Image 1 (cartoon, rainbow, N blue to C red):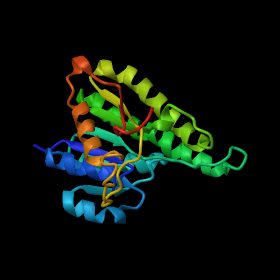
Image 2: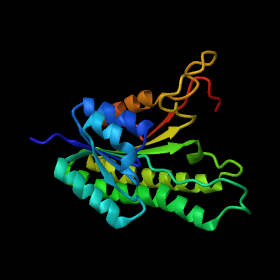
Image 3: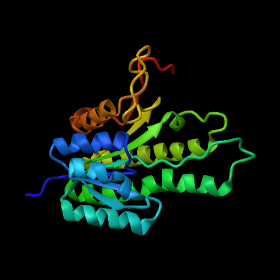
Image 4: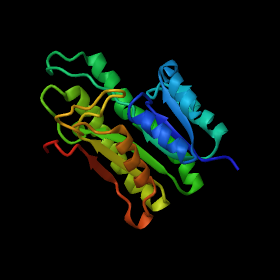
Length: 229
């Protein structure tokens, strides 16, 4: 019997890499989606994951991603980590850059969530996990081009959760409130754990996926112990 599949859309070297390692160790077949899969070569070699070149803002590209995942095994988890952003004073923002941020960060979440939902509803179980940020809750000065897609993604996740919880599909949204520790960077000795550990975030994602359905979380906020909020 084929192992269950975890699709990670918007894969890179931070949280997605930690998720790929953890889920691989837990017996999942991991499928990584990114615009540039060459950057994932080392991670693919380490984890045995399948990397699929994907533009999350393109319908056909996302369809091809999930069709490739179908060939690996039955879907159990879909994680949307892709993010679109552009920053600056509202009068100076490039409208095309803002449009692209919305397409990647919000519309991309819809496309990935839709494909995952179709498969998990048929399966009758599984999880769809969306990665948010502080900007999902607060529109800071100069961050309109980031807050818009993040607010949109959170709204999508809320709507999907209300629709899919009764169908035994766990939809969760994670507020990452702080900077994630970059891969290979040594922590500051005078301020240990001031950034979020990507491995610790990955542990939380898996724990939420494994929650008993009598007590599902929809939203989890994660921040370092030194972060003010």
